[in-house]
Length: 98
Image 1: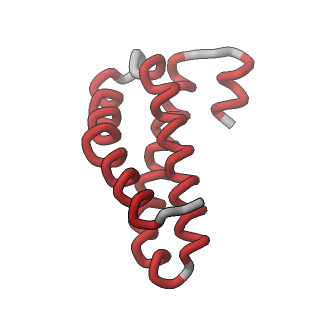
Image 2: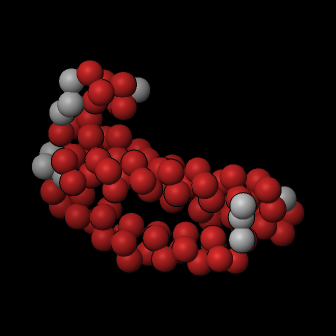
Image 3: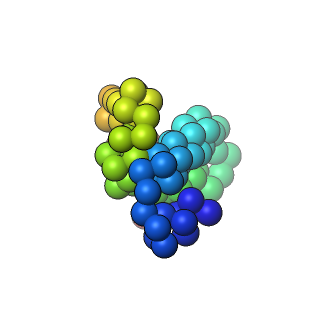
């Protein structure tokens, strides 16, 4: 919904909430991957791609949206660069998804 609103009338608030939501979705999805890797590798790869796509939404929109809540935006971007991206990179190597 936020992405539709943002595409029609770009605002810092919609960019922030779109990024905030995408970050939360990614961080809820990533912990499921190790269990899925053991039981359903194709699903693990799909979930990893989904989380990666959500982090792309954060990376593309949080700089603009960060003007709405600079402290929260900084925390999210620091978590993405310091924890989430390294985790995703490691999972990609481990899963070797196509």
